[in-house]
Length: 209
Length: 209
Image (cartoon, rainbow over all chains, first blue to last red):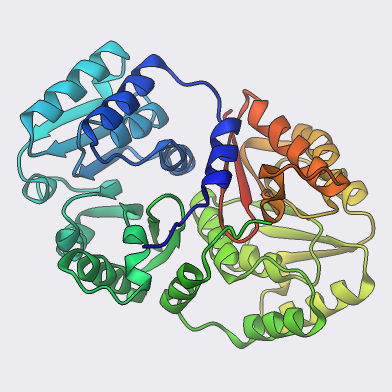
């Protein structure tokens, strides 16, 4: 296991970020309390930044948890944009619905309970695909969803460095899954792919046409 | 001094990147030979990615060295886009001109020898501003150039973590310069600003209107 961002750097970066809305703080608190994995605030800010620059109309999340990443996407898209959340847990989705209701963003969301990949296949012309489901499914998800992307789509995947294990000799199914996914995306000539060493690694891949 | 990206992660990421053109390899070789500071290949790839997504017409670099970052911008913009290089060294600019001539990108470049900030002030409607000049000048550069930015411009600054010193108790003029610049940009409500812990830290700031 490799520390990807030095904690002193992380602290400095968090200190620069502005105060956040109560909804977000509440979600961060819930994640901590339940030891529920979320992308952290610095990754959230990266998602926001990329979304503002790309201006997607349709964002599809494969694996949404209780809505932490969706919150960053929803804040960043225009009022006519849509974020599709998928999660197998009705509790997670119900919580997300409540949070988005309270923060006035609910019209930008679609809430779907079930198998992320199965639901994802229903969509077309996706401008931004966010991958955060089971790690051994990443490559399958990419292969299934690439034909469903809009021109110049962004694919963003969380956990692309998997605690640094992809760079070590680890060979468990998750590490193997992420490594295969990284190699698969990096090898595609129709995408420009890079991984940012933030938190657990964020892959950002841009469809070149 | 803090190691911002673990060398094992860096090696893994470089291993995923595709083979590069001879022009780029030659520039990397020159940087190594002369111990000349350049953004490295992973930062170059980030610049390329952001440029592809944002599609700027006008890129202005404050502090271009011999053209390594300009090369990533020039490859990423459309054939009608323009990258303005600025450097005080005629040798650097002459070398850049030769490299861009050889790689067929020269029509996308403007080569300017002189004081980066003085030259920068001549431009308007800048879609992407790249800041990489003397570290104590960063904040002055931002203040002078912000009125010259186009709507939804990107400001990208290299060395935003200054070997991690910004997060430590160091108080030399460079560290202080970078720290002041970071606080200044992070505090502006008209920009969304984040710093990516890649190599020496890359600030990416997006003008919200």
